[in-house]
Image (cartoon, rainbow, N blue to C red):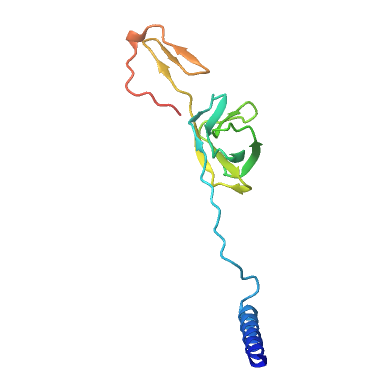
Length: 159
């Protein structure tokens, strides 16, 4: 019986030495592989310069929506974070303080479990034109032609 105990003790000692040798040869900071967490970009509906809301759909688990506005040189001049997201992931953000400018872009991302998604870059569109026989109207201005039969319009360009 003494021989069996010695054999078991030798096996345990050999196992411990082998295990400690493997552990001591691993580089510092090595641990089990981590699965990187990725978050999809939110879906953002088209935005006009006269829009009163920015709407779209985020992950239902999103905790906030981040909106960045950029200058002409693409540097960030304003960042806003909104936490009012519906249970189905839809969101609606007031544009009251955003000063949307046609031709510029709005960058929107979402935060899910502390991880920020890539941005959705959405260009701010010019207001839609409504044209009838005598009037051209946008959401902010209207031009009326008194005698349309005197004018021939070949191309309408908006700058």
